[in-house]
Image (cartoon, rainbow, N blue to C red; front, side, top):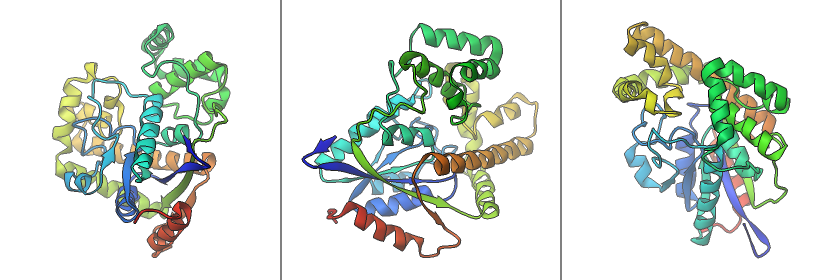
Length: 314
């Protein structure tokens, strides 16, 4: 939305899992009279706190957070839902002279907001096409869906996470509804100006942080959080597929040890971090900071934000 001759200004903090995005976002929002919009596809779910690495209740109370704890685990949540809700929050904050800080690692969610993607169709995707695609998934699994996507939208094959059935389904829907790839849906209508801050770290250090985070999650009670997800998995369409949840199902089934399941969480989290970095580097214009190589990165970032926001309300 454009007011006068100015576009809304939005700061986004991106990067791989466990790199420290949330901590930085919190500090920046406090310093620059801002509020946080979660750009994470799993933190929307109530009750999924440990496995999604939500900020603590104390941190959530320090700065207002949006798009956190807004859905039950039984509900579906789409990229279009995020796009619409996040834009509404940005505009409301601007009206109240507050700055918006989008924090999270779900790349396509953020890209849909920045590029103003025309995602087409209804947000809930409840139509005959969705039923057709769900039938393909039931009969042929994710491989069947990927085959359809490869035939119809090879461009999306190179960009989206094809291990995520919901993302594949949505890509097929958008292509059929609009005739264009889901990654080529720019409306040509810039509604906001974005400054993207990317945090990264040396690979070995990042992987060590990921492994340590998983161990800490277990200490915090991850198993107690995952158990009801496992028990009610037939009624949970999306949340059950999150990293940190699905890997523990074999433990509850008695077919794998806890140690092997935790190793799987760590491995999948490391692979996810790699995919995140690839996506952000290839798809977005990000100002990157290596937290190990640049000890004063926070000061540099704050100075850049001052220039970006101009006369922010401090």
